[in-house]
Image (cartoon, rainbow over all chains, first blue to last red; front, side):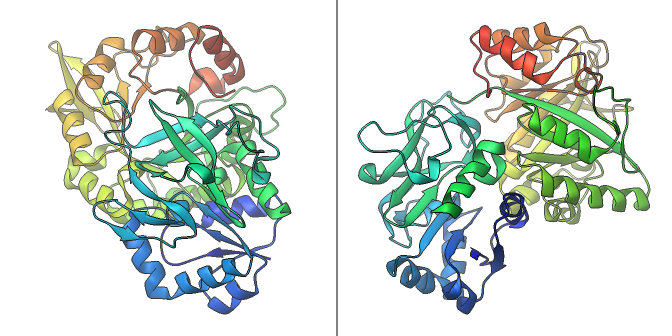
Length: 205
Length: 252
């Protein structure tokens, strides 16, 4: 069973429907006991980093997630859930993340050319790193496959952990991983069949 | 690089898609769920559901259908029609909508955009504006294009984006239904004042009109249409193949 961690941010309806559509057994839960018993974890998230990080800490689930992943449990963070895997975020201040992947989250303003709109919203293609094998969660994908992005901040200083990038006037981190911890900046649950194939591959890990 | 988006729009009344739909191989052509699945499987980048029912029974049915659609299709869903309050945002977001489109509701209560953006994020709030030339000026219309508000439409969308609307849909009343192409002049006027994605609506009659749109106005992010897709005059797959051949970046 896969636990979709519910800590009071965002709507988990689409995410849970998308797992259902690929036949995966999931539960949406904020219960530490269920999270500890789950085989794999999904960390979702939308909105502002500070709010989400505060809610996760207030629920005490941050510790549960860190402990469980240290034991080797596989975790997939999505969108803001991915950003929270890093050490720090500089989204309107400086905030601590879970520190499961080295790196930090910064604004793309000043990084992408001025004429490009921020947030980066829409379908963009994935670029895989040339110097390492393709991530197992992308086993059903080809270079250039499009995913749906909605974000204004992105992960940086995480070069060794980047598993795909996307080009938006600059090269932005689209996904990262560190051992059993995986994160995707885009929304696989909103990226059609190709997006669902990532969830399927994660289930099969 | 980010792709140009092609977005079919479905008007739903009393649980059915209105404007006849004419697809080969679709048994129930006015079922919102079947049509949404068809589009999702055939290259649509996003779907817009517009609730045009006036009764509360109709609205209840709409939200039930929306829930079913959202549980079966996995591309972004935008919902509009009858969005007047934060409770309306809440109602459709809970059913699985990703973005909410406001039109007359924002005219009645201009603070709605800012409040919704603060609560749900800019990316969730779409400002849809019905615009028509009156004495040579782009003027904002309300109530499905029936009522002239007298408001300067360009100033309106500029303010809307400044207040937190994450995307602007420009519906040209002048070109709507004419099928003679998108309203490039109006779209350019909007693109010049906002720095959020602009979605063109009104006037698409064929593939060439999308080519012209994206080539003439590279700042436009998406093209929205209803009847040409519903009647099968244009298939999204063919449209994207043609755009790709012209060097326009699309998801295929």
